[in-house]
Image (cartoon, rainbow, N blue to C red; front, top):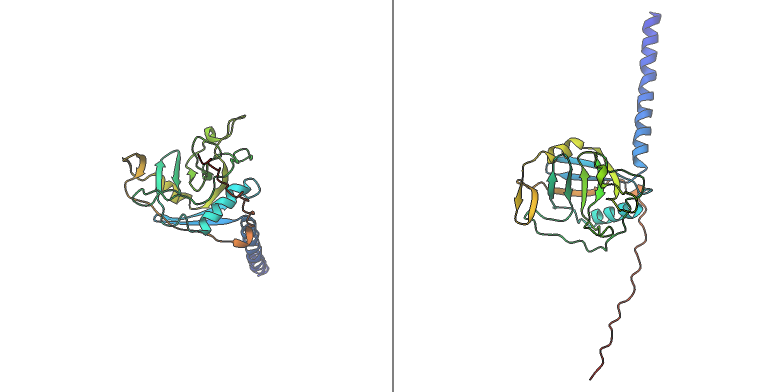
Amino acid sequence: MQNAHYRLFSRLLLVPMVLLCQAFSTAAYAENPQVKLQTDMGDILLELYPEQAPVSVDNFIKHANDYHYDGLIFHRVIKGFMIQSGGHTFDLTPRESDRAPIINESVNGLSNGRGTISMARTGDPDSAKAQFFINHRNNKSLNARGSKAGYAVFGSVIKGMDVVDAIADTKVATMGMYQNVPVTAIRILTARLVNPEAWTPLAEPKTLPAFEKPIPIR
């Protein structure tokens, strides 16, 4: 009888301890901004790192808040490398960002490991705008090396890596000038900041007024 009472007491004690651990876990996640990508293949929850990559995080959230990513596809998918989105609609029509390019934050201590999200760019290190990619494997070759800029990691997948794997596993083909395009379009239906209280927007950069150079009248 005494053992039965002890087991009952232990179980009753265990319940609040489990709930407390869950609360701490949720609070730890909530310290950083989270963005949920609702896609045709399921949800991907991203945790962003404003301390390490403040400009990249601010830029990504502002694009999400402006509904830039809604309806765009994963237009470049390479299994065992990465999946990329942020720039094209279902028929590969470009959707240009109306925001200025951002500085490269690849020297921030974060590595392009499996499940991390990074800014895509051209050969110019400071050319990233809206496009991003999720690493499908550890891609250390994309990290900064010495004076050579890398690809800036600014967050990671905390839920939905199985969705990333499913997207990476889709059949791809060359379509016009674009390579590695999924044969069946995979859209980002919505991209939403799920905990706005965890994000403090950066001030918008001031732009100088444009002055036209006078042309001499002859």
